[in-house]
Amino acid sequence: MSGAAVDVHTVHEMCQQVVYRGPDDEGVYVKNGVGFGMRRLSIIDLAGGHQPVFNEDRSIWIVFNGEIYNFPELRPDLEKRGHVFRTHSDTEVIVHLYEEYGAACVDRLRGMFAFAVYDDGKKKLLLARDRLGKKPLYYTLSKGRLLFASEIKSILAVMPELAQVDERSLLHYFLLGYIPDPESAFHNIRKLPPGHLLEFENGQVRTRQYWDLPEFGTYQPASEEACLEELEHRLLEAVRIRLISDVPLGAMLSGGTDSSVLVALMSRLNPSPVKTFSIGFRQADFNEAEYARIVAQKFGTDHHELILEPDVVETVEALTGSLEEPFGDSSMLPTYYISRLARQHVTVALSGDGGDELFAGYERYQIHLADRSFRYVPEWARKLYREAIHPRVPYSVPGRNLAYSVSLPWQERYLEGVSIQGFMREMKLLSPEFQRRATNGEDQLAPLRRRLQTAVAPDPVSRVLYLDTKTYLPGDILTKVDRMSMLTSLEARCPLLDHKFVEWVVALPPGWKMREKSQKYIFRQLAKRVGVPSEVLDRKKQGFALPLVHWMRVELKELVLGTLLDERTMQRGYLNPTGVRRLLQEHFDARRDHSARIWRLMMFELWHRNFLERFKGGVRAEFYEIAASPGVRRS
Image (cartoon, rainbow, N blue to C red):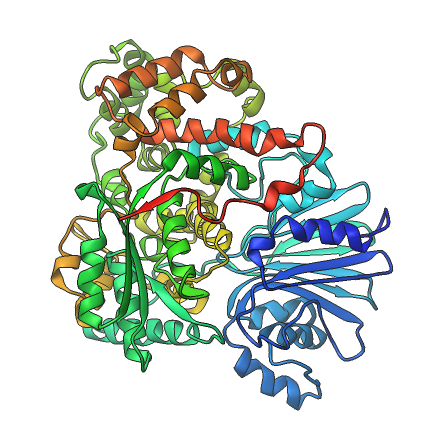
């Protein structure tokens, strides 16, 4: 846009990189140096929802990824104001809202979205991303051209010279397992953060925030019963509006509390049995299919289950070739598998993501916020221990890392917990040269520390919930859900992350979320209220678990050793060979479980090989040609 000419071929090439995001249709429109392109997954108005969509005189265009759930309520008011609709799609509602309200149109939208509106009269482009970050949006301003896309590979397809890695961002990956916004893995490509707008006019880019989490702890329900009634009512509404679809719809059922509550509410709203999907693994410790089956039986769902014996190596190789950034969350694998299973039966699936960030469900909240610091020991003494004594304590001494952790103030203890900064320091996994270049003397965890400091929250629990909702949720959880579901052309919807529901939950004081040793207190009470079986509620929380330890020592061992000890890996200059060998030795000798850290390192190197190195000598067409079903052996 602006600068060099835009042609239909360029826009088409960008679209081709993400065919799986929209296998049903492609729309391209180019005029006066501006080009829009869209791959469509048809959900609403199957016949008339072709994009780009225009206003009446074709002076305003839009391409839109996502769903607007309140479009049926918005449309009548716009029609009363004189707007003429040519389709029945939610996309067209945004166009006419923009005509009425300009950039403020985004305040009226309830849903998940990333969209671009071009105002031909003002020669102005507006980009917007939803409040919580369910849908991705990348952009770059290079050589006078603004390029934007749902995935980085679309930008690199037409400007491969932008594949220059950002070492600071890669350091954040090593510490966190993901790259937080607005950074990306590449110097000149940025993520538009959740709840932000970007305006491009006269060659200038301006970004601004239009939404943030409200102040925590401002609403105290009259009683537990009153709180439960309102919680149920609000979540039921969030589920109801996400059942709007012109294509088959179901739910991912992990067997955990969050997805079980959603299935309970969906069953109440659906006249026919809800289609539910779960996967399991043969290793008994990681097979949650039994609990999903119990929930499915309780609510009479049309249940589909798959016990997997995956070809892990083939799947990992295929997925790392599709991810434009290194990504270290191993639960991407079960998310991919369950998405692929669901897509065989439906086009849309509801998921339970967001419940842990809203209701304090992660174990780390108990571990790191517990009052374990030696408050009776002066800070100067604790600092002396960290700086002078701890480095001299032998690595093998039991409790060594625990002593370091409890000597920290709670804020620092939590930041060390959500990163692996302490582990990296102890194991010396990264090369000193890379760390010096990447940090340039700056605080490695500055992005997280700023979030923690700016949270409008009166207590530690609420402050860390704010931090995780602004960083871990969009950077890890929602990135995983979007990428893995879209690879299978499945749309995932998250009722727990409805922004109106989120605002209400945020206002609850922390005692409704963590009460003594009970996490997600009020949400678990809701689960009992709607009939989730006690077998599900009383079991130990697993998350979306998989037998990673077993895989690392068996199926993946050859890939791990062949990748991380390879000369190419070490010559890149990111890793410290001595630290990596020590890590692998401890793990494969079964002295310690380092599977999650090893996975993170391996995924980085495989990303380097399977994605980044494809740009040597120019981009290749097969970027979007990920195998539809990398080897899985069914039970």
